[in-house]
Image (cartoon, rainbow, N blue to C red; front, side, top):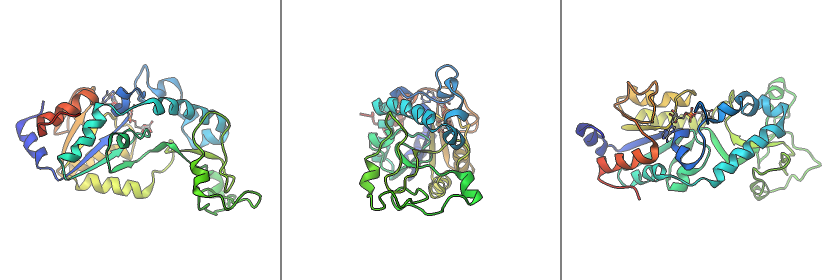
Amino acid sequence: MIAPDLQERLRAVRHLVVFTGAGMSAESGIPTFRDRAKGLWAKVDPAEVATPHAFKKNPQFVWDWHVHLADAVSRARPNEGHAAVARLQEFVPRVTVITQNIDNLHQAAGSRTVIELHGNLMRLKAFVDVDELFSGDASPVICRICNGYAIDDELDPYAGPEDLAAIELHAGSVPHCPACGALLRPDVVWFGEPLDPGMLDDAFLAAETCDALICIGTSLEVEPAATLPWRALNRGALVIEVNPVSTQLSQSASASLSGGAAATLPLLLQSVWGSVAR
Ligand code: APR
């Protein structure tokens, strides 16, 4: 499956980055985004459900779409691929998982260091209208609970974190923060929004200082996340790709393994570290 010299180099790795996209969770029953027939973006225009402008225009429609996705996510369980990624921690001194997925499945499988570049569907945060913010109409008061804006005296300023934690993504009307009254939204990164700068710095640093990076189930269509394998390659790290189809990375990668994550990752683990994923 992988050349003996690469196996040896992988066994010597001290810091491994595992970079994942929607294909990682496909075999857990969560659709990918860009599959031509069944992908999420084959069914709806992302501009209608995954931008701050869409939420501003029609919050309930965007909320309902995310509730529908959360339904699939809450029923999903980690697959053999997630389990194999978690088991890498037994063989490599430092493993950093950097995921574009918002489904929590790496954590559920036992991966300890997970950078969620695109957020987490099961968390909420206050909606901030960027247009108003830049025009100076929004009060730049940051709510201590929700990072929301415009604290309203009529509402309960003493609501604690547990009040916010109790509010989840569920069917029904879009909720408001009990502390500041802000409209709440899923804590995911929509098109046109910046990534959390601290997380992005951590991800870039990990990719640029690791000895090897395994890139799993991503079409590498979305920047800045898509730059991570190249950052690793440019610093001389080994880069292994796992994907049933070839991508712009396939030719440049140290090895490109054609197959699904759930079958390929346990085999990779077995061939390099002589172990079978449980
Ligand atoms: N195992 C591994 N890879 C798979 C599998 C599988 N079982 N099934 C499909 N794939 C691959 C596809 O070949 C494709 O290259 O997963 C990739 C999924 O690509 P996308 O749907 O584009 O998902 P992703 O790369 O994660 O998208 C990045 O785009 O819309 C945004 O915010 C969203 O985080 C997402 C970002």
